[in-house]
Amino acid sequence: MLQLLEFLQMLLYIPLLALIGQGVLYVLAGAKRETNFFYTTLRLISRPFTFVVRKITPAQVADEHVPVVTFFLVVIAYAVVTFELISLCVEMGMEHCRR
Image (cartoon, rainbow, N blue to C red; front, side, top):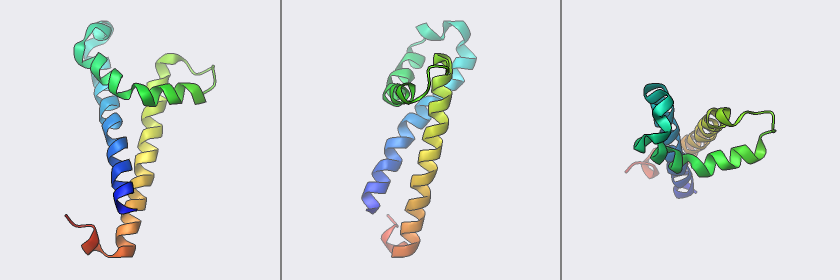
């Protein structure tokens, strides 16, 4: 169970960083962000998560807001996994969680 939670944490950490980087480049690159190599790479990394969020959100949510909604959902999921990991480590004893 410990390894599963660590794997989920890593799986959520990657798109979380990609969405943060995408947001920073959204501000820095401005209108030319669509031609920015790093912005498109970060968008490609976070695309599976934004695709799922686009499918579950109502049509009233604008497409440009989907990455923001995705970011907050990934943050919530990451926090839940982290708290479960901490809870499991406290329950099992901290010597099992050290590397």
